[in-house]
Length: 211
Image (cartoon, rainbow, N blue to C red; front, side):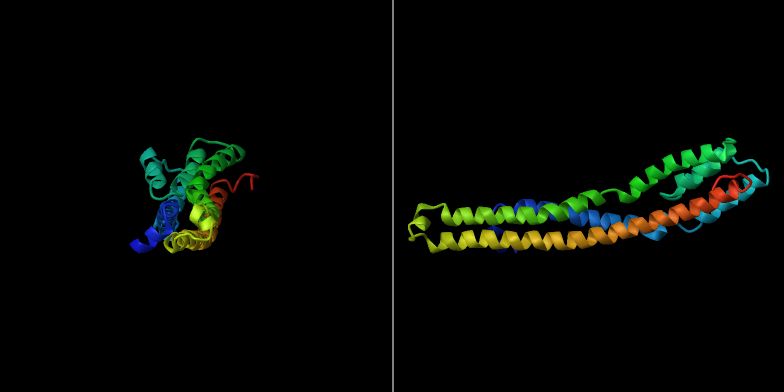
């Protein structure tokens, strides 16, 4: 492997750098977007139990709401509905606050995915850059122009060109596939959050005209 890196020349280092970043993003997002992490066991039950307690005219203490909001990434979204109901907010006002809280939750689900898409986009360009550098090394020497260049110089230039092209594609293709997969998972988690929050909102504001 080290000999391949040497043959690829210095343009390979930016590709290695972004590949490490991309791998870290894929691992982190794969862990974060697990359903058991977004919806830990007992989170939804706790939210609906608190809603039932609130509807039965039993007081909720702040610690109960805080505990719910800290259970999972979707906790603040569920807690927001309860807090608005406790504050006596109308359905329209509660819905407005819920939408603002939802944006913060969606940003957590989408975090780093833009960077992963960028890596998938620029990796082939960096590979192309390495190819250009390799071609410059081939034709840049006076000996190569005169047809009497060193075979070692020619071989090195070809290695730089081909290795960087290959590495660029080797990074871009998995990064693009991972981005599409993680994007789909994030969208699925968002739909699940919306559905559970809608059910909680409907339960608490079923007596209102809000949808």
